[in-house]
Length: 115
Image (cartoon, rainbow, N blue to C red; front, side):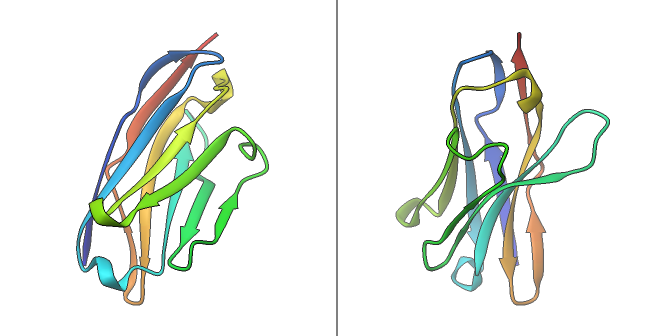
């Protein structure tokens, strides 16, 4: 099993930046990939970005060029750098970890972008 704890959310003006962190503990050696998802108010959860164990990076079209996912293996932490934020980016952001025995989720962190 893996435990995930997100942090770094907050309130920011449009055009601003935030960096989200997702710290992992537990069976981290089994992680195949880690991803960020978000759930805007009143909408379904949607994919944002992912990073595989081999370093492959994938982004949703809506965030490509503005957001960047990265990983610090020494800290067992995955980051999501959010730049050029728009009010439409307002959501609860969740990280997950894909393991052979399932997908594990963190509790989420709120990002609110004001216009």
